[in-house]
Length: 371
Image (cartoon, rainbow, N blue to C red):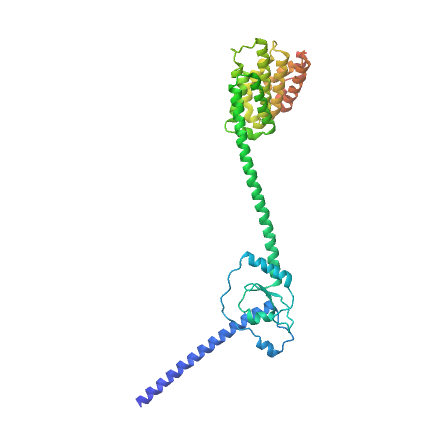
């Protein structure tokens, strides 16, 4: 009885084991069927329903079998370009494979790089990367726009590269010329050559502007050379030259006038606040040329240079009201018409930039006092 009971127990265990395995198998089959159904639903959702002319049996026969096939190789840009041409020329034409059904090729197989119909997808393009024609056209439109933008940016980059190279070369040339000019002004003994060099420097400052001062040490060197010209300390102003005194004085006057032309443009480029301390230094030299014994040309030059420099300095000119306002009021009574004209202009510039500072100077009283 024990043996029968044991045998009976073993038989029940085997039966239970078989039952569990059957349940697991059924569960697995149900899971696979559910996955297949979901995959089929996704495909049908992409393609739409199967053609109405198919019978229920034919639709059942064309039910896709889901296979886990590996994806094809990644397409390169040239592949997508070829695919774009295919879509452009062959979209919505009848499928060559399913001629009898007259199926339109309205979807794209990315993997095979061709247009296919719904039946092709269900038969031979399962597990492939499938896209609608509209989505591919949208992709190509966006891609084309991006490519155009990238092309424009590349062209701009090339242009900037060329411009940068040209600007770098121009910067080197400016640096070389400025250094050479300053060297000539300081060392050359020919007044005519030095005067020409200063005039050239003025033209560069006027027409090129700030890049000239961007040369390392140029600002200080330019103002130093102009100061030397005002104080007769340049090599070409050496007193040991063989020229007679009258000719030497005439050339020195012309040289100083050339140097004076540089001051307003330097004030304009640097700004009044930065140029202010330099102007104080040159003011002493200019006032020396406004003495009673000074020539008409010296007076006219000095007043004109002061007026142009004050105009370039702007509102910081208020710092020079005290020394210059009484002087200009005096100079407007000069015997020479040009001196008077320059003095009136200088007085107007000073008044325009002095603000309330001039309130301490009774205009009528001062004016009539000098008259």
